[in-house]
Amino acid sequence: MTMLDSEKQVRKDERARILAEKNPGLQMSGMSMQDLQNLCKELHQKIDVVDEERYDISAKVLKNEREVQDLSQKIFELKGKMKRPNLRRVRVSADAMLGALLGAKVKESVDFKANLKTVKKEEEKKEEVTDWRKNVDAMSGMEGRKKLFDAGQ
Image 1 (cartoon, rainbow, N blue to C red):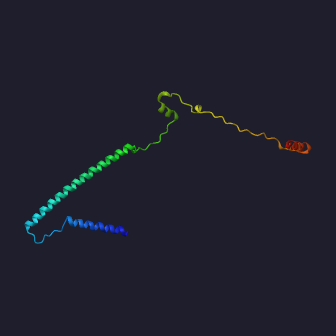
Image 2: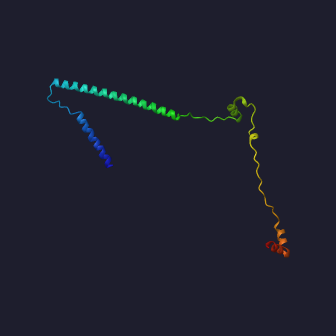
Image 3: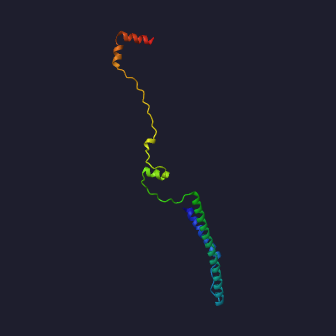
């Protein structure tokens, strides 16, 4: 904040110094009528010169602003980002849409479901489920243990 305040003060001092150089204070005391008239004529001439410069500068600024605006418009057009109008939602049937897209080629209504691919699903292989009680009955007794013993060798 102190730096900003110091910069503002420096700018203010610079402006006052430049104005003092360009426009020195007038000493009108002790001047004759002829001298005052000459001073007024000089001031009017200086005012005319300043007005001409101001007009020239404002004309240049206006010309540059127009040029910048034209160039920015050209850039905008080249990018293709023109303002798009708001689109309204329109309800159209499938037949009307196909008629609009394909023209007079399609006369009868088109069945979309007929054109769809058919996909066959593969059935999962199910393991055969056997009754576990039969296995237990077969395994009980000596024959079942013998079968297990023989299967292990």
